[in-house]
Image 1 (cartoon, rainbow, N blue to C red):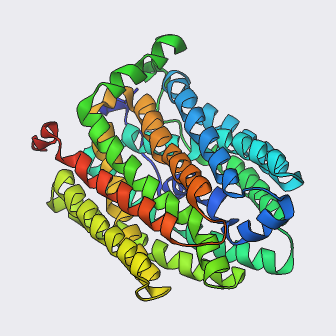
Image 2 (cartoon, rainbow, N blue to C red; image 1 turned 60 degrees about the vertical axis):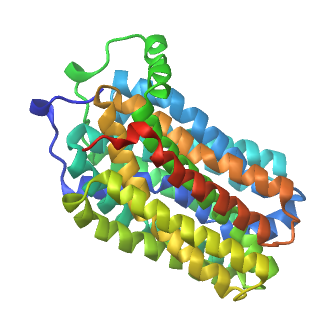
Image 3 (cartoon, helix red, strand yellow; image 1 turned 30 degrees about the vertical axis):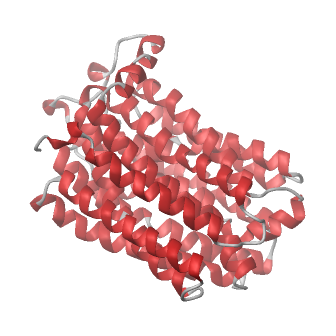
Length: 399
């Protein structure tokens, strides 16, 4: 439940940095072991893409549960419980010896990891109005973008000198550190502003949200965009390492290039949201993403440019995330301030759960040897869907 103006909580810069760290949990939990995926596939004798599928299944389901709980009991208690579950799941991943064990551990890990980005977004909405929220989300994106830059680079070095199990031991330690830092974060939903309905009644909010066309337009926009993004995140290790022969320890540099683009656009977006409407920014950014994804598909299909025919269009596509994610989130939550927790949960569930579609499509249609075509057509199809959803009639109102 959103706070009324007199109850807004002042947040220090240190707290915003901690929230950025919590928002980075999803990308860190996945990106850090991307360089290890080819080796994991050999060691575990199974489709390693399923480790991402399992994580996203747990992540999307758990958000639906945590959202109403956070509206009723506040943000900090679910955050603390979630971090504890994340640590337990990370330990399970580190100890896994089969594909089944690590997939199940990844589901558990995701049940805890999801509270970070979900409740961080809700806390931004608790404390800031629409435009300021979009500006702050862009700022937090710049900080959290360090995770997918550092993650694959660090993971590549760990694989060079140790095993992939060590990656998950590192995630365990990070979870413990974040749990300690959580003590510095204030509660943004005081008792007087919390939902007084039963949890069962709170879960019924999802029906209202799904029927809210304006909320769902923004939510589906970012959801379809992330289907395309996860197609690259999941498919790129095999494409770059197995198909193009890039060394695992160097994979992180190619991956980090895209995140630099996200950081730059997120920085610029902090100023754009002050001058232009969120709708206009979204229409322009999704259109550019479509052009980049179609260019990528054409280059791969016709064999143009080799690895550069992938790296350059993907950079442009990923850069648009600096606008799409922040503006969609701020605009969607602004439509339902009285259900901010549940709305953030549903939005996050669909946004990150969208990767389930990507990983399953890759598992079904890819050749397992890193041929880039499956990855690129998935990106093109869903980039178009992301832009088209903004064109429906009820999106015409002015803000």
